Amino acid sequence: MKLTVNGVHLTLDHRPVLRDVSLEVPPGAVVGLVGPNGSGKSTLLRTIYRSLRPRGGVVRVDGDDIWALSARAAARRTAAVLQDGNGGPTAMRVTEMVALGRTAHHGLLGRDTAEDLRAVAEALDLCGVRDLAGREVVSLSGGERQRVLLARALAQRPGLLVLDELTNHLDIRARFELMDLIRTTGISTLAVLHDLDLAARLCDRLVALHRGEVVAAGPVLEVLTPGLLGEVFGVAASAARHADGVVRVTYAAEPLAPEPSPAVTPGPEPRPEPSPRPGPNSGPGPSPRPGPEPRPTAGPEPRPTPALEPPPEQPPEPEREPQPSVS
Image (cartoon, rainbow, N blue to C red; front, top):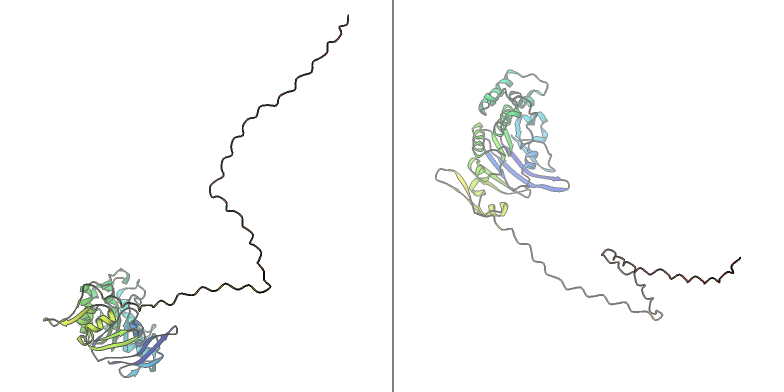
């Protein structure tokens, strides 16, 4: 199926996030959506799988406006695998998780048909996870879990795959294996990728998004030019096709220096304001009352020990006159 995004505009929290975005994914092609963080890549994917309705523009899958289709009809055409967010109940068995991909065909309460069982078995085999069928999803490694999520999407048998950082947190071998697996399906795919080497190696075309706008689209080497890598990603780099046919990106040792901020010309120093002139009837104002002297910060001085004064002298006793003796 062919994906066509034409003039999509989206505003969130009164701020434009996508501005007149247009792109195409030809039938059977793998197109990489690249750009720095905050450029609107994941938001654009949400408009494609009907999580966000754009303010303007149209998204068509196989020629039909996705908002003119029912939710179930749109889900039958497009399957999404999101980053760290749509793993579902991890206590489920792998087979049960993959079988959720058939929900768009019979609903949550419908019984599995022979066609459903066949689709699940084919997805398990294609993604190489049949030996994990009886295990709980919570027990899987990161690479195994991503394969199970992809198997669930393939069990849906969509005409379009939308992948948001499917290779996130995977080692380099697991990334290559997963992207090679996607190419073997022959399903039209739009994949958000941060690894430019991986995007250059495995994608047929690239779309570069920057600040909510498409700044380049086309074959890999026409998009990953030194000028775009410097302007959009802030790195000195170049891409070239090597003798083995693989396109690789070569980076300089250091990122580009940020653009200097414009110099600010200092203005004239402010003039001091003149003191107000006294009026004809105004006299000198009252002198300000002096405030209290600051108290010393040191502690109180020790009081001197008072000198001991001698006790007061007692007046001498008066002499007694001799009494006449009584015979």
